[in-house]
Image 1 (cartoon, rainbow, N blue to C red):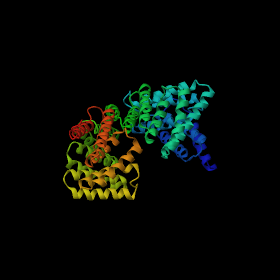
Image 2 (cartoon, rainbow, N blue to C red; image 1 turned 90 degrees about the horizontal axis):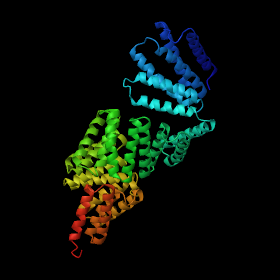
Image 3 (cartoon, rainbow, N blue to C red; image 1 turned 180 degrees about the horizontal axis):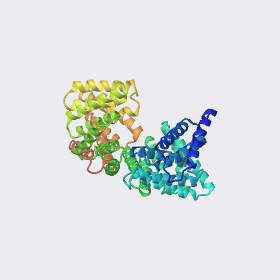
Image 4 (cartoon, helix red, strand yellow; image 1 turned 135 degrees about the vertical axis):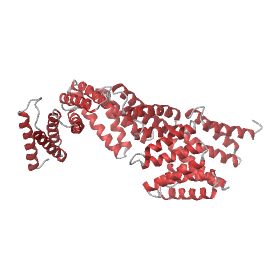
Length: 508
């Protein structure tokens, strides 16, 4: 609650504003000195609003600020000041609408009607997505205003569940976040119906939670539905682009790279329309497309996308982490294109950036160093490859440990180095451990497991277990064909291995 002195100050400011407005009609104009005085009064109210911890008092002050802004926007003021006031007016109206959404629905309709008008005044493009979003919320507010008290009570519960789920999500407690998010969606569907903006928003945050829980296929489905509802209710907007991109991430997580690539191609087109070509979100879109295509497409095309994303990240502030991840991706795509020198340079850049962000002893640095070791090995630099790989695995041993599923990639990399050093038994143990970790983490029907199992098949062949090698390769081929498609380079590589293996078995 406010102190007595603060309350009196707020009251004086409000009464002075009421006294002024009582002398004016809606069309009256203020003198320049009166405009400045009103700006000062509004600032005083805003200061009181920000300091107050009482919700009721904050709402009353905000309503007074809103009326002051309406008065000021009716005056002859400079364009820059009008733009600034409109922007702040929109934020205040959004706060007031949220506060009255289920408690006083008729007032919420009033605030959302004013919000649509303010958006139209703020945006020069008459079909701007924020105008359409405001109109969608207004339509929803009108529907809510027609509901009975029991339905409003249900919606209040839904909002509480939404807030609980959001708080748990922000805290990284994803299992705890999922249940209230599900309840929120259920209540929205029962009271508002499926085709509403609130339902789409609730579905999206739940889908993102499922991704964090590694329930990729389920996440992809609900996020695709969120994108569909968003497109129907608002049209092309960040909600649609974000939900569709998250859906693609869900497919990628589940190993369905064909679907991930197809959706992400649409995300790239939509991101260009919504954000433009030099925006972080557009860079993320093309970067993810390059990532998904890296398993199924043309390495030269993928490399072009990855490099384009890297250029955008480099021109934006605060994007060092994204630039580091992008450098790793550029390295991987360059390696797929057999440009090992470019790959090694990109991996070294990633290691340097990751070290600057997280420190030298971090698993992310180990990933970049392990990738660099693989590039060095393919360039014939065996001593450097061994040194880099030892450095990478030392970080893993000192941080997450070799029993952590995240260490699987490093074990595969180390096994490759050990095999080149002629230490085949040690390599076999490392590959088997990596496959075991991957099976626990993502299952045998995931492309990442299938790729690791190719190395295991090679080991089986080299130690004379040809039947086991063939069984492993056939399973990998089935996974690649199902998840990556018949044109996958991984499927072609696996079929080639099977053909070579069968040539050693004349009885077949």
